[in-house]
Image 1 (cartoon, rainbow, N blue to C red):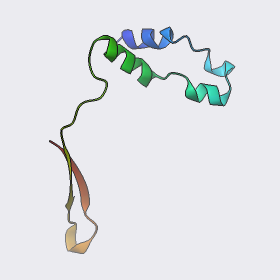
Image 2 (cartoon, helix red, strand yellow):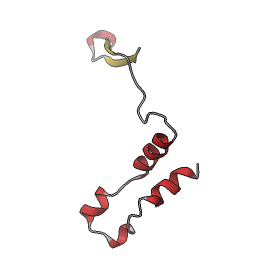
Image 3 (cartoon, rainbow, N blue to C red):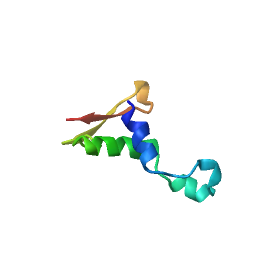
Image 4 (cartoon, helix red, strand yellow):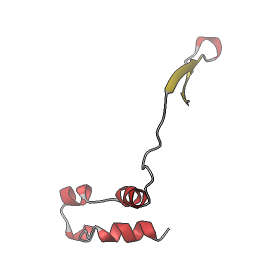
Length: 72
């Protein structure tokens, strides 16, 4: 777990309170740090998905149904 905060610190971003709102929004985030740690470990940051199917389960008495996404 310590790897993520260490990776975030390695970006050397200035403290958020010392930045403009534009710069603060565009700095590295914890998500960037997690992706960096995963990359260093040779693991993909995003799970590969072969196919996604969309199905609609009808609701009772003609009411709107439920959209279901299945990963296969």
